[in-house]
Length: 305
Image 1 (cartoon, one colour):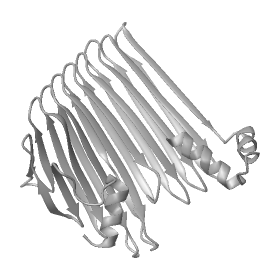
Image 2: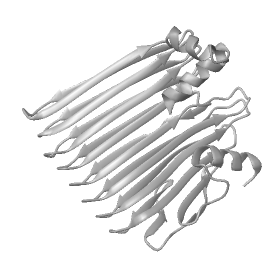
Image 3: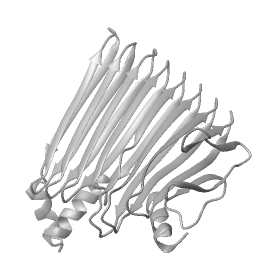
Image 4: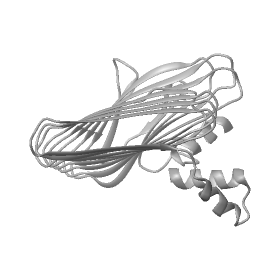
């Protein structure tokens, strides 16, 4: 990897080099390298770009890293990654995409990730998106996540996009069976003329399943954000969807949380709050010696933490 690619890797995966254990590294539209572990197999797809990841039943305390790096202007790709998580696993998957674009053409990555999580498995999925470059070409990322949770399984998603992405449409569809749990924490920050749209659809189909969807975002300058969520309770279940946003300057934010109870024992809650930084918060920090800009940044960092 060159210095640009190394910097992108650090931003999206917190890595200075490829880790021990299983990983797949994609650079500029091609699979650059991959490695299996004793319990995790990564297979390159033959019919379309992407990989299949097979995690053996009972695998514990292992991780898989699958970063994607784009450093060529005008490169556009769609990648299909399928994750097969066996019964009684406890694993972490770290994904992310970094785009460096200093040219005049748009660069775009669309990742379609599908998770099949078997009975009793526990999965943590971490995804970071990052863009940089001083060219006129846009940095576009459109991630799609499809989740199928088997009985008594658990999945936690942490998705972060806080810098440099000009346009993104983030789509998540999930179907939960009995006793399963899906937790989603999303963090987004937009600035300039950037646009971000989030669209969550969660079907609670099994008895005792539940979901907790939380989005925190900050919109600056002239940027625009849209948050959509639809939680359907089709069995005795519990669901909660929440959107909290800080709006600044001339930005615009739309939040449309929706809940649908199709069973008498479905317990569902939705919340949405959009507002500016409170003046008393700024004053309190400025009395401690911070400038107004420094105080704003401190509040934003705490909000997105």
